[in-house]
Length: 362
Image 1 (cartoon, rainbow, N blue to C red):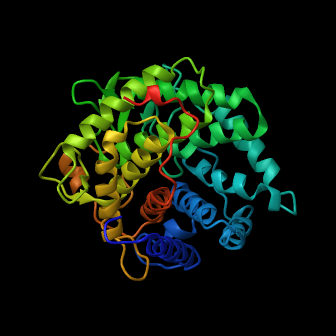
Image 2 (image 1 turned 135 degrees about the vertical axis):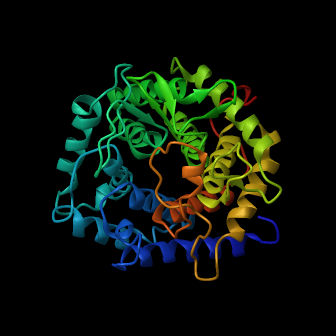
């Protein structure tokens, strides 16, 4: 981060994590307030960022508040098993050894059965993107990588159960195949499998879900995973295009290839995280470090003195066109806070390659 030493970065990370947790315990009736108190994807992304911030701090400073939020809602406020409501289970996996009352096991089993067996699939076999309040039958969304596939990969790794990792890998390959536009070298927000066509646009946050999700999931899958090289080829094509589309400010636009749409923080943060981690793991070429660092600097610039992450768009289902995406207002949201935390903590990681073979980064 330009102009910030390591201690300043750590303080910024702590301040943003603390603000995120404070917001999650403030039950505001303001527009968007429900996102902070409802068991859904939005707070799941926030808490995933808080978990990673805590791991970077090294002493799990946030676990008590995370556990208090989850335990307080695990019975009284849970609404529906779906792809989106699964995202909080990433935090529950982190807290599983602190589950003194044994509440989490049945939750894991319920979602495991949904993701492996009963959750609806499209004709192509892709996991249908299911949500709390609507029904978008036959639709495949980029969001699913972060909301459910990442949990499947983590769950399989922790349990040493290949069913989860195999299905996570199969779904990852399907989502990449269905959502990637080979001409524009970007992902569409969605795909209608019944109509066999892309839906939405080349949405910024959707591409962030893909960049970050691919890196996070591939880290957990076995190196001999059959579709690995094809997925990496797609990722590399996307990253090259993202570098071309990055603004001088370090940001990306809410519709990536439309200059008439606004720049957007959550997309910038998610892409920064995916690039930085991908470079560290050897999945993405070192040549993109400057792109990643510029994006990280833009994320830092979006965080105010109280730890609010500004300039992120509100919740966004698949829309008809670029104009509709551009009409989504800016809002302080759990998911923008969470994606910023992921980018910030990754920026503090040592710049050394992980166990992934460097020949994969091209």
